[in-house]
Each structure stands twice: as structure tokens, then as C-alpha cells.
Amino acid sequence: MSVKQMIQRIKQRRDAAGIGMILTHVGIVRDSARDGRAVSGLRVEVDREALERVLSRERQSPGIFDILVEIEQGKALCVGDEIMRLVVAGDIRDHVIPALERTLSAIKETVTQKTEY
Image (cartoon, rainbow, N blue to C red; front, top):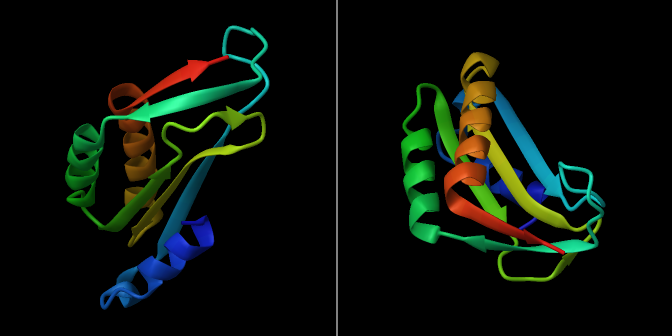
């Protein structure tokens, strides 16, 4: 699902009139690792149960209406390919920005494993 499709899905919620902000994150394969090594691509594995726990917890945060995520799992991704699309919808930025940061950090720390090549 594209970011545009994810946003449209959220806007179709019955309670969408209360949404004041939708924040997105798109992770992209870059040509170097954090330590500077060259990267030609990567593969991501996802712990789906851990992902559901993260999403369930963060969806209960004050002011958050929904969180949607798409992760490209098990594919050989090349530089420039999208790895993950994350969309967080909520009432105000004071709720939405921290929820996106917490969700993204939890996904990277406890849900996904990347193999760079």
C-alpha cells in the first residue's frame, strides 16, 4: 500500500473529523551503512507478533486515531527502494510527533532485522 493509499484509508474512518495531523515516514535504502561502509542493498525480516504489540500499544496513546505500517519483508531491496512506510494520525502535533518517533524506534529496535550487502 502506498503512503497515499494509507492516508486515504485513515481519512475514511468514521471519526476522521477529529484528526488534525497525519505524519508520515518513508525509509529508503541508502548507499552506505551508518559506519560508512558501502551498501548495494538490503533485506529486512519482520517479527509480525512484535509489530502487532508495538502498534497495539501506540494506538492506545492519547490523541492517536490510527497507525499504519508497511514493511518490505524478505525482498532483495536496492539503493533507492522504499523499506518502510509509516503513517500516524492523531489530533494534535504534541501527540502525533512523539507517537511516530516511539513507533519508528520500537520497530527498528524490536521488530525488524536488516541484512545489508
